[in-house]
Each structure stands twice: as structure tokens, then as C-alpha cells.
Image (tube, rainbow, N blue to C red; front, side, top):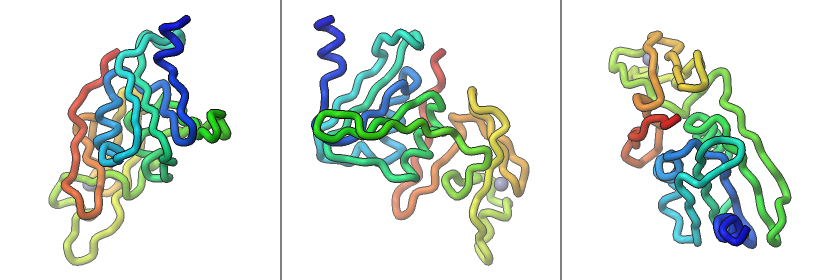
Length: 168
Ligand SMILES: [Zn+2]
């Protein structure tokens, strides 16, 4: 019981991202840019869980996620649950589902793909073929990507690539 308490140390105000696939917390922090926060952050990696064998959990004090960050997390870890905390209480729980079509968030690496056209660039669009393990297909050039092959679009920042693989 004491052990459980230590793991689920409460935050006053902020965000708890729970039920992250084991081994993905650091990838999520890196890809969503949350690793740049100077706020207090607690990260649990490979925490024992009743629902799944193991999970990761992230708690960030004083930070609420934006829509893009939530979508990125849903792509990286479809089973996650996001809780907004205020005054030590959960004020909102979000289950962010992976969308059927992912727009703008991910870049197609195919140089000849129309989404990379220099003349008239258009927003990228991917169809989700399988959620887990992730398999998506570019709507324009039909190229298929697995989770460790995708690249998130990021403005002004160096593209960050998924490094870890699923550990089931
Ligand atoms: Zn493409």
C-alpha cells in the first residue's frame, strides 16, 4: 500500500498521463516537447499495473496539454488516459482516441510525395490501417509506415523520430 502511494504521488495542478505503453514515457516527452518544461515532472517507467502487465506514467505540475500533444500521445500510445488535476482532484479525464485519419501531425518522408511539393505544399494526411501495432498509410503516395518509422511535423524544431519499439 505504501509502495502504491509513492508511485501515485499527487500533484496540485496539472496533467497526469496514465496507462502509457511500457517504455514509451520518454518518447512521449521527447516528441511532444514536454521534455523542455522546467516544471516539476514525475515519470514512472515500467510501473506495475493491474490492467496491463506494465505501464508508464507521467505527471506534470502546472501544465495542461494542447490538442496537438494529446493527439501525438494517442498515436504513440493508444491506451493512454489523460487526467487534468486541480487542487489535487481530477477535474477532467480524457481518453484520446487515435483518429481514423491523421492530418498535418506526421510527415511523409517520401520526397516525391505530393505532400512534400515545394511549389504547392499540401497538408499531410495518413489513414490509420491498424492502431496497435501502428500501421498508417499516406493518402497521397500510399507509402505505409510503422510506429518506429513515423516523423512528427514540428515547426522550427528538428524533426524527432520515434526510437523505441513496442514492448508487449
Ligand atoms: Zn506520401
